[in-house]
Amino acid sequence: MPVLIVLTVLFIIAVVAVARLRGLLAIAGLVVAAGVLIGFMLPAIIVGKPGMAVALSGSTAIMFIVLYVAHGVSMRTSAALAGTLIGLAVTTALGRSPSGRRGCRASQTRTSTTSPSWRPPSTSRTS
Image 1: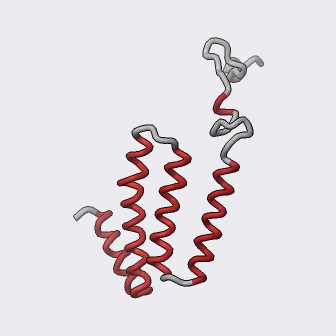
Image 2: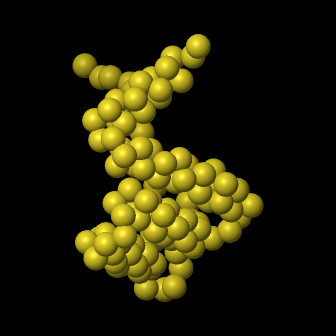
């Protein structure tokens, strides 16, 4: 049996032994999160959908499901979800440059391969 499978089974047993039902629900949340990542986010990025929109919608779906499954429906969980969603919205807004383009300016600058502005130090030594 591969080592990774053995370690996964031991991890699940330890989580359920320590946290009982809440641990089992947390493991179920991890499985759902992996399903969203593999079934929705990864294929969407591979076919060229906008990364920011895919990340935002995928993480929102994961949060809704995982938080309520692992912690139950309560005002405390809803407040945690609202705070995290606000944090995601702020991060998304900060991820956009003022010009309306996505990403940082450094990745959009033009580089020339024939005349680099930075040259490695010379390897010849003079004594």
